[in-house]
Length: 121
Figure 1 (tube, rainbow, N blue to C red):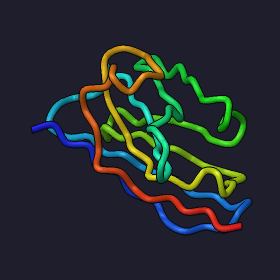
Figure 2 (figure 1 turned 30 degrees about the horizontal axis):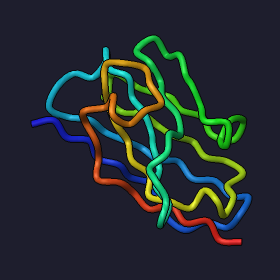
Figure 3 (figure 1 turned 60 degrees about the vertical axis):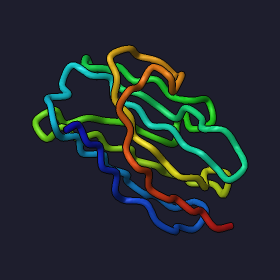
Figure 4 (figure 1 turned 180 degrees about the vertical axis):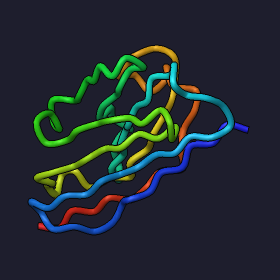
């Protein structure tokens, strides 16, 4: 049973930081692309970042320079370090896993339940 579990969300003031974690279980995910998406109220789910099995990363323009995605394959875990947070970063953040490096959510068959991030102004 494949399972992805996010943690680390919460309420933070603008300019603050949070670190999200996503632990995968049910199989070895070392060869998988691990991604993060987010969905704000009334908006579609949007791409945030992904990291490949070779540790290559790709970020949405809106988070580039502020967010850093890393992975620890020994723990089947990825970490999304979010700095200089803005109110527009408020959303439910979802981690995902797939085999193709992509910014389209349809390329990821495995998803977590999401963790809420709220940034106050």
